[in-house]
Length: 113
Ligand code: DGP
Image (cartoon, rainbow, N blue to C red; front, side, top):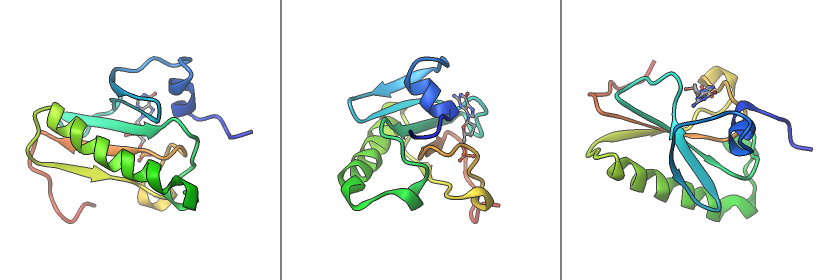
């Protein structure tokens, strides 16, 4: 059995979220601790712990997530944004269900901390 996370609970409706996009492969909702005026999380419905655990059979899904992240950013009216995937504890990953952060609405510094 895949391990339960906050995001698997959001996917099965146990925890509410502010949904911004949904299809048969993924769900997007607003981050509970926004780091910018727009901060959306996009997650696959399939349980994948992190990008590190993605398998050959997930390539199409990963492409879909990247493509949809751009659609969502544009739907939010963003011209400039950052797409972030934290992979592993030391990168800042705290929820071990693969997710893309879509962050925008303010100037973003580089390099990130
Ligand atoms: P990361 O640090 O990359 O694993 O990002 C996890 C993000 O998930 C973090 O920005 C905060 C967000 N988050 C944690 N719990 C919840 C929740 O219950 N609801 C929502 N909407 N976001 C959450």
